[in-house]
Image (cartoon, rainbow, N blue to C red; front, side, top):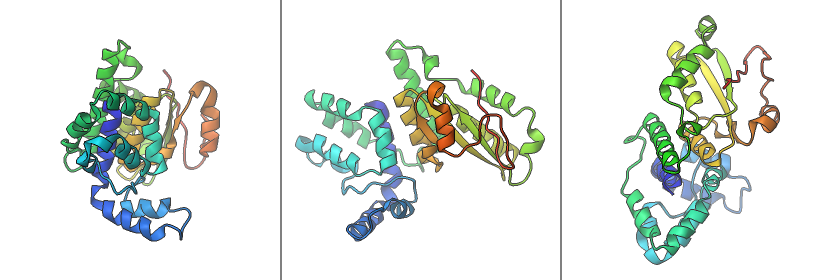
Length: 269
């Protein structure tokens, strides 16, 4: 429950300022426009939004209906956000806490935590995600390395990846594409983007990734959403069997091929 509730609470805090405007616009468009997502994204100022009249804190108004209210609230999220929440098998965990009479208490604890970007930056949220995953992996007797790669190792990998391209990456307006076929929580993609920006503030790195573990995929995708990056670039699936299809579906040139704009780099394990 901790990981999905952290994501949901973060999304709620991010959308707080535009919540009423989204509700007003949604009410205006219902019955008049079939596909409202682009409009509501603009109003929300994010790639995601929530059309439920509930907020995270309003879930606490009635302890007896909190499970139903939580389901209604989650159902109000846009498709991209719901996809992230679904990958956590969140419904199963909610029912388990409800039967144990713990759901209201857990929601109350999270409602007391302010995860607004003005309080907790995107970088800090990235570290928070990774620390939670590392911690819960250790508690379940799994190898932490399956989920968590130390930042120092990632920085070394990124430096090796770009070691022969310093001159190219300093050109004004350069655009590069990087794909990590086992992206985990997105650490490689985030550090690579930071590295390119430090070399050339005018450069842009479009990041793509795929991840087989449902929970880490959900964390990576939600992190991309909160950073304003295209969350649809993060795919769920097995890179050994699905990578070619993912690259093709997203219009990326094949590994090792070049055009005038991008070059796909597949990090090796």
